[in-house]
Structure formats: structure tokens, C-alpha cells
Amino acid sequence: MSERDNILSIHKLFCDFMTAEGIVYALSSVNLDIRRGTIHGLVGESGCGKSVTGRAIMALHERRHTRLSGDVRFDGRNLLTLPERELRRIRGQRISMIFQNPGASLSPLMPVGKQIAEAITNHIALPKPELQSRVNTLLEQVGLHSSVARQYPFELSGGMQQRVMIAQAIACKPELLIADEPTTALDVTVQAQVLNLLKDLRTQLSLSVLLITHNFAVVAEVCDRVSVMYAGQIVETADAATLINAAAHPYSIALINCIPRSHGDGDFDTERAPLPVIAGSPPRLYKPPRGCPFAPRCKHADTLCETAPPMLDIDHDHKVRCHHAR
Ligand SMILES: Nc1ncnc2c1ncn2[C@@H]1O[C@H](COP(=O)(O)OP(=O)(O)OP(=O)(O)O)[C@@H](O)[C@H]1O
Ligand SMILES: [Mg+2]
Image 1: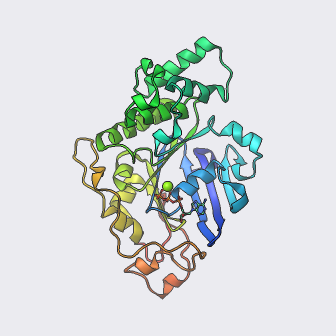
Image 2 (image 1 turned 120 degrees about the vertical axis):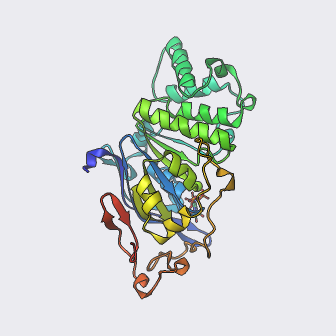
């Protein structure tokens, strides 16, 4: 596996927030490679650092109270050290992001076609007829009729709004899409449709996707590779089938034991999420982790776990951060 096979390589990413209550050590040495043309799941409990990782890739943090360091390599350059002017050229055009709640991200005052058009004209100047036909094509690509262009967000269902958000995100044919809990606000059937749309777009547009979710059922259905995150660290990375059938980190195993059953017809029974039911709670992030952060909740923990485990290759393409990985 060479560097060129990765659309994005994150190496030793740290993110600290200076708050009135003290420093929050949100990310501690995150390493993550996203391979070209794959859907890479990032999964873990609430507060483990998934969204912070997504925003760090886009360098979207408010800089004054944030200490961000490490290497986020995209097309040979570290995004963390690029000037804002160059980042603006990459954001929305080569890397784009969709969020959990489309209602909050779309303007209520503008027809959605115009909002999709703006996503294009922010980066590329196009004559009006071409712009219009591009908007129509985008709407069709996300499974909406072109007449939807004239409608306002409040006239659309949550699933249709999320499709409009996806149309905006793919408007400039990005290479990488970061999707932060894109289906959590939708009902179960619509979740499945939107996830299937992401899968189709990955193939049609040779898109690479970082899919952030707290839900392992989603991972099982759509992801090629998966990283499990705990307390600001990646604790395991493998291809999705390996992770689901042969997870090696005690935390991943506990998460997988909480996967809701699939109906077997492609629908996800995600109503029983959020996951998981693991005894204890994640550590507060006001201290940098010493030793294994999962140790207080882990039945295998012993004195070895007082020292931080390194990320170990336990098999081909399967990395685990645990002294007792099997
Ligand atoms: N701007 C900020 N200032 C201070 N702390 C922050 C800030 N943003 C995030 N955090 C903290 O960083 C940690 C990671 O947050 P993050 O939003 O990445 O979690 P998450 O894994 O996305 O959770 P969820 O599944 O609930 O979305 C949390 O402890 C959160 O409180
Ligand atoms: Mg989040």
C-alpha cells in the first residue's frame, strides 16, 4: 500500500481546546488513512472525537482557542499548514462535508436549486443555462426530480433535504466527502436510502467518503474500511468484514455486540441505536491519556495497561491499539 493509494493520510493529529474549565485533549495522536474510492467508517461513542476529526480535516476550527498539530496530507500537502486562501479553494471543491441536520444548514429563504447553484458558483463561473442544467443533473444524481429546484426547504421531507445537501456537497465533483452522521436525523427507511445513495455516488463519481457514525449497523452495511475511536484515539482499523467478524480490541468487540439486527432485506433496524451498553463511561478529556484510556472499563486490563499501548499490526491491514489484542 503506497501513499498514492490514500486520498487522505492523517498522521499524529492532536487537537486541544482551551476552555474556561481547562484544556480539553480532544484528539491524541490520531492516525488514519482513507483509501481512494472507499467508504471509510469512523465509529465510536458520543464525545470520542469523531466530529473534531472531521472538522480538523477541513481546518474548520476556530483558531484562537484551538491547538491543532499533526499532518493531514491531501495531494502531497499538509492541510493544517496551508494558508486560508488555499484552504478555501480545497473546501467545498475538492473536499466537502455534509452534516447531521440538513434543516439547520439550508437557508429557509431560498429555493434549493439556487442554493445548489451557489455551491457551484462559489468556486466556478458558469453561464446561466449551463448552471441550470448542472443543477438539474445534480438533482437527478441524488434521486430528485429537477422540478424540486424551485421548492423551498420547508416544502421537502428530511430525506429530500439531506439529498439536496448531498447535491450541494458533490456540486464541484469533490474527491473526498466527509459525511458527519448524515442519516441520524432521518427515519429508518430513509436512512437506508440515503446510505445507498452514498454507495452509488462512491461508484459513479469515484468518490472517497469518510462516514462518521456512532452506529455499527451503518458501518456493517456501507463501509469498506472502518476505524474505531475511543477517547480521542483510533483504537482499531481494519476492513469492515474483518472488524465485524474478527474485531481484536475489547472496545470494538463490545460495540459490535450491540449491533442491532438487520431485517435481511437491506433495511437497517437503527431504531434501537444509540449504541452501546458498555459498563462505565468514557474518560473525561481534561487530562492527556496515560496508559490505555479504555483500561478502567476493560475486563482484560492489568498492570501492562498502565503504559499506553502502541498501534500494532496484528494482521494484514489490521491495526489494533491494545496490549491484549487477540
Ligand atoms: N469547540 C470545542 N471546545 C471545547 N471542547 C470541544 C469543542 N468541540 C468539541 N469539544 C470536545 O471534544 C470532544 C470530542 O467531541 P466531538 O464533537 O468530536 O465528539 P463526537 O465523537 O463527534 O460525538 P457525537 O457522537 O456526540 O457527535 C468532546 O469531549 C467535546 O466536548
Ligand atoms: Mg459528532
